[in-house]
Image (tube, rainbow, N blue to C red):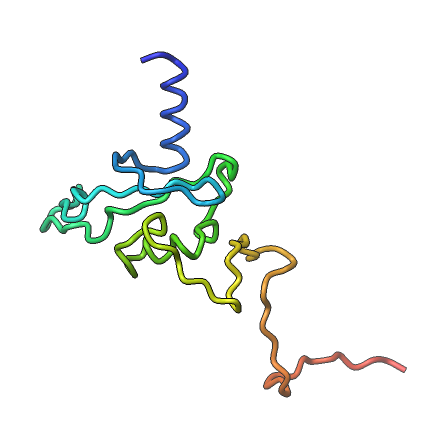
Length: 139
């Protein structure tokens, strides 16, 4: 195997943490590629622990995120049209049937703001149950 192919394979495994083969079902606007392999649907999970071998239910559809996202990707990069197909809400991918779009739903994926200044922080408007102790001041 040439060095370039080996390095690509290592980088691919580093990003996906899995090596699978499947049929390319489609690509979204961000460049994410969606795959399916129905032979994986009832594949038995190989474990190193003793006990029964359990089937991997629902592991036959997956997404390979666009290289433009680098290694900083998460599930919020999946478009709403493909989300339903990935989570078995429908068996018809958006490439075959147009996704129903509602005017009140934003269809552009936005990154998860957790850990940033834009993260949602709930607050209460009621009186706190615990009052902070304030040390007395000397006059």
